[in-house]
Amino acid sequence: MLVRNCSGGVVFAGDKVLLLQNEKQEWILPKGVIRSDDVPEDVACRRVEIEAGVKAKILAPAGRTNYEFYSISRQRPVCNKIVWYIMMSDQETVEPNAALQFSDGGFFPIEEALEKVTYSQDKSLLMLSYQKYKELA
Image 1 (cartoon, rainbow, N blue to C red):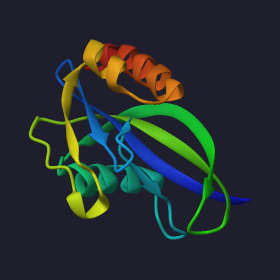
Image 2: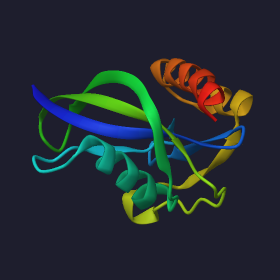
Image 3: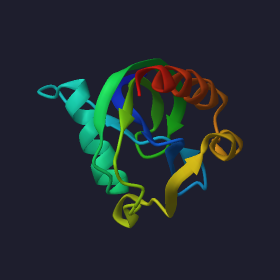
């Protein structure tokens, strides 16, 4: 199994959170693979900007998740281990990166975001991150 270390952001603007819709029509949080020379915090900030066109700063660690899937292109199972950060942005304008196959995205009120998010562990991460964000902001 290929294990990939990744980093991502749970980005808030006021009482709204950033979600992106990928090529599978899944609503997800922005994230990317940590390469050997990368710092996880830098990867999280960079992926938020590359995937959504949003500049954001890290407030605190949010936690970790992981998931496994079968990669058709690699012909083997993959495990993504993701470290997440609670982030804040002053902007609510989102430009989903079509070149990376993001078809939609935006900042959504928390209740709406919880309904949209595809994966249950992302819902849990979002709820915990929002509680922590309210304490920090």
